[in-house]
Amino acid sequence: MDHEDLSASNKRRGERVARHFMIRVQQIFPGASSDYWEVSTIRNISAAGVLFYSADYYKIGAEVIIRLKNPLDTTIKEVTCHGVVVRCALSHDIKSTFEVAADFTKIPEESKKTIYDIVNYFLKKEKKHHQ
Image (cartoon, rainbow, N blue to C red):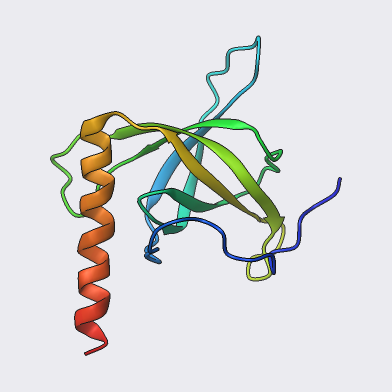
């Protein structure tokens, strides 16, 4: 299995926030349905995509469904969006774990707003902390 080096340039659009919270990820396999959802932790997120940890290898170009909850407001239901894997590499920090980068490809409008709110909240908090 050929794994891409994590030192590759940082190509995702948008400012990222490094906040660890839970997500669920399901890989979409053409012609097959699956009930398997991997529970994972986000390493960082932006309005354009997400980097998460996984015990599984994800092939570049794989389509995924991502479900996340706003860690700031537990009254909001889970957000569901689709993405495509753009990078998958062994983590330098966590043994036997992959870091998977996925760009968001299909996000319902209400989900876009929730993701935007999460990212902006943490960006403001980080900027305030560094002042």
